[in-house]
Length: 294
Length: 280
Image (cartoon, rainbow over the protein chains, first blue to last red):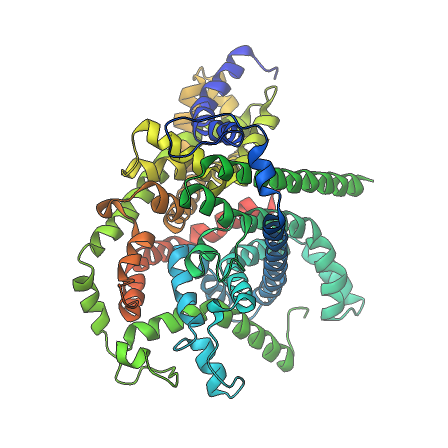
């Protein structure tokens, strides 16, 4: 059937509302961020063009540290999410009684408002009265109370663990779906040849999961890089800025200190990093797809 | 048989599930126990896991400490419902267009929609703030609804498009041959068949809207009467100390309605998610 003109017009009519909406709420602000980053916009009435001044200002040692920290934070959070997610999916994929209920029970961190889950973790991390410090003391593993969120090193890991906790359900369910899409005859053929359970997992499941692993890591990478609520509620970037990631730093500058221009420059940097991730992702997936066709 | 497990394999699997679910559910268990403990027990050392002389008192007193709490729950539901409705109105026609018509630039446009996912809210906060201010909607429900919608559109389009692509094309063509207009076909042929898919999209959108009301509510709204649950819960952070048992009780009361809805609809949810996930 040839594509008629009226069909194309109809398609555009259907798309128009969504396109317009996203243009106003996402595309325009994106352009605006870019423009703002070259100005000294703030609460003042007048706004001046300042060229690269905002960018010059942020390229200093503290900000380099913030970028470095953001990458480390993201790297560990995404990796741990993927490891726990694949582990959970493998367990939930086993044909044992009760698995329907177990699958349902993985969902709560994802469907509950993020802030509520974060409050719960905030209490568990409490040094004086919290569960983690308390249980570790009761078991005699540590001598005194540890205020996890008040010390740089532990706060860094505490925010990562909470981020992992919120992200794991989606990774698990996605990986579970991917595992169920693997043809069962592969396993049966390997089983007939005498391959053990671990061998089948390593030689069939894992290789066939690679495309899904890459897609999910990518989605997870973007979400984690942009992760705001968790750090903001738990530590607000403290103590001593040791949990300040780029997004927290941007929020502080722009909304906290009302330096819109400097904040926008930071936001532009975040966008550049995100674009690089996406570009890399498309390169990798297209190469994978090409490899499959050979 | 291939799926028969030896006893030690079964033990290992259940142990693995226990560890995994333990990590997932520990905060909820602890949160619930905290809601049962009196404040005196909470703020005492050494730590006690079980609530001795625990009670549901916090579930009563929470309404007195923060009288506006019911309003916060209502706000959360109200915002999520409106967001879901707008998303569906925008996404159903768009998903149909992407699923059926292959016009020039359709692939690029779909890619552009998916790219929206990259800029989740926080990055665009400054211009969004200015935009909301120039629309004159700061400190209203709209300031929390409008940005929320935009960032839920991409995954909704993706999910629904995948679903609609599985509806046989012959149906459209048969209607077309019978002289039905494009619009009539969409409304009378496609919509009824796509209903299960639309339900899934509606549920996931609602969950997304309900779970992610924080940053816009924090930044674009300062009126107590419009606050959604996640921001409203900060009311339990008193001047001296956090009233933890009431905070936890309020959290459980706040999520209960959403959990009930999701539990009733989970059948659709799991099947819909997996349908959207595998086909990539």
